[in-house]
Image 1: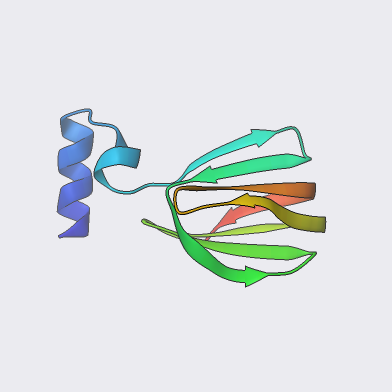
Image 2 (image 1 turned 135 degrees about the vertical axis):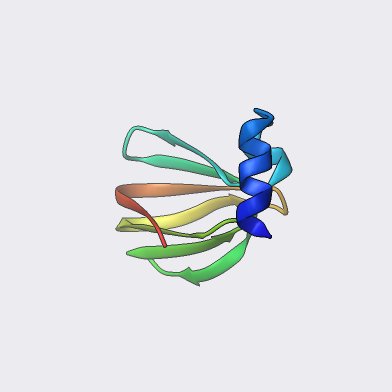
Length: 87
């Protein structure tokens, strides 16, 4: 069902973030990251933050990571961001 919905959204050229709940990630250099459409925090530490999104899990690794802003729709992560991994 999920694969069929993805195909339909793609064929109709609809925005995936609205239709499938996909996360929108905006990185400003290697010091700031904003994640919109998240579903919650799975892990939170100074070297690793894992976030649940509608389509996958997102792992952010680095040093001195902190969540400086958090609400139901978006979060802002600051620190020295090394990598963003989609699990």
